[in-house]
Length: 434
Image (cartoon, rainbow, N blue to C red; front, side, top):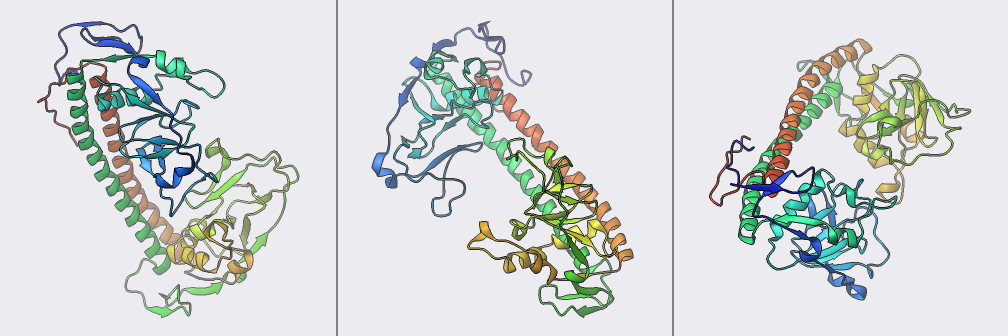
């Protein structure tokens, strides 16, 4: 970074170990001279305000007509936010993904957050990048107190910020606006490329598990509308002739706990987020064996199913099925039953008052028709798909690494500019290799 930009003519010690030296002419001010606290509650006028949230993508508007997540019964204690206000999350700082935001909107936000306005002679953009940089490495950690890692207002206002003159602040902010926009654009392009690669992988898998590998094979009507045509030599049978339901319970719950989701299939709970709910007692959980098919009854409508690669226990509310005889390659049946036309079927026949309460029960599964090839052909399909998806996964991994490099470059760029490690000149341009 330093090789691409000039440095300032003279530096001085900052007094902060992580920061090192700063430009000699930069000032140091406690936050009480930079920010002023706002605390205007919306009261009974909450209906006049747009609801805002602080996220990794900045301050966003919440969709009240199609709500996601939890909402309070009333918003009386929420506080006003004006365009240009700073929003700080000063509690659970270590665990919170983003603790600072600069609002582009007028609206309201939970009273648990701290809303502030910068004083005159401070550029909002510069201050935002400065605190975004601190947030990236949790540099405010020395200010935490208590079990919830809370930063008190007193500690925040006594914290000292290094700031250049106003004109220089604006130059740095404008430069970073331009450069980070270019980097974000490059990241967005690569994210779209990843989505296309994932989509191609799903299309490839879907076509192979529902039609086979031979494009010239003679087809027949399956007799089931959602399945449509299948190769002439394939079987079409209801699941009740292919699977038994297993309802054997664990005595003490000491076996490995498994979870089932539409994203990862059957996976050990230990690999999931540690903040997930943990029961005190797992006795009476359902036992499963390697190659058992497991449905998350509550989320089957989203495709939450999979084949276990190990022995373990699952929630009593899951359904465990075992093949009557070896009709299916485990990888094949997982991909077949997770394909779009099957997931659409789970969604259609599941019962419940609304989507979050839909249930796909065993009787629905057993009545479902399944179209499939002989086991030898399934093995061939799996071998082909393993190779094809491996190439696809490698391409996705390369794109993800490129994105990580761009994000690292963006973070380094912000850090170097707002801490004075490089001197940003108003007409300075830097080539971003995207």
